[in-house]
Structure formats: C-alpha cells, structure tokens
Image (cartoon, rainbow, N blue to C red; front, side, top):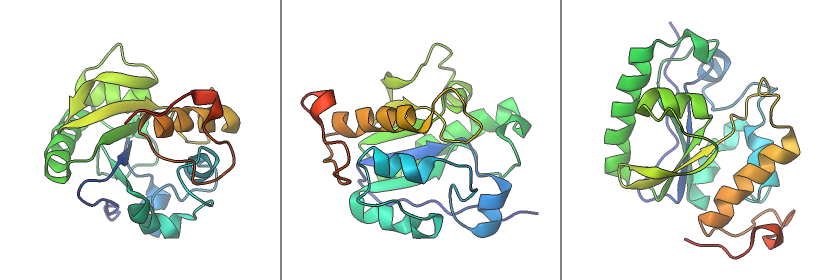
Length: 186
C-alpha cells in the first residue's frame, strides 16, 4: 500500500497545478513530481513562475508565490493508464469540493487527458477553457511527464508562460520576460 501524497494548497492561491494522480515514486518520496524525468520543476522556472528551479522537496515554497499542487485522483499508480474511468469522475467531484473551499483563481490541469476524463470535456485542448471549477478559471497545460514527447522543454515552458502571463503574474525567473506574450490580464 502506498501513502497518499499530501496536497500543497492554501486558500486563495493564484494558480493550483492539477496533476492526474501521483506516481508511485512521488508517493514513496512524499513529494510531487519527484521522478528524475519529470519536467515540472524546470518548466515552472523556465516559464517564470518560480525565481529558481525548485527541487521536489521544496514544493511547499510554492505557497509563498501563490501557487499550489494537487491531483484529480489521489491514488498513486505507476502510470495514469491504470486508473479506471469512475476514478476520474469521482476524483473530479472531489476536486470541485476541495477547490470550492480553497477558492484559487486558476486551476491548471497538467495534461488534457485527465481533464477530459474527469469533467467530460471531450473537445478540450491546451490553453484556456470556457469552464470554471469551484469558482476558478480553468487552463489546460501539456503534461510535464518525461513521457510526453509532443512538448520538448522549451515548448513546455512556453505553454506554462502563456498561463502565467494570462494570470497576471510577473516573470519571477528573469529568463524570458513577458515580451512575446503581450500585456498580461488577470
């Protein structure tokens, strides 16, 4: 039996990043996105969400930046493909309840597959969605897993940066600035 991975959340965060479910290695280590091939931490930094590249054991430092981490389904698995359709639906209902209590501004789903499965949004793609969840606006990002070959690191960071700018957050990294994205809108 693997332990459930604790959420990194607080009330009224700017952005809560929502994974599909914890991986077994992350659950054992007790930190989100802790496998070596996962590109979440580099993407957060390269996109300007964080002032430096955090390690998984520094995940709680995100809270001071108004950022958080949770997942749709809380059960850890080796691969998301092990999840059953009803787990996505139940996880989606649970996520709505949790986010209604926490009231983040944005929910950023890490991968279109989990968002589609949990909320029946069959036509969803990467980017802003018309739906809201628990009062939060919804954005779908590419999955940062190292298995997602469709988005190399630079393209992944660019998608994360699009959300950051739309959310009205500054470039904390100083790596890219906001020039290519135009004016930010909250």
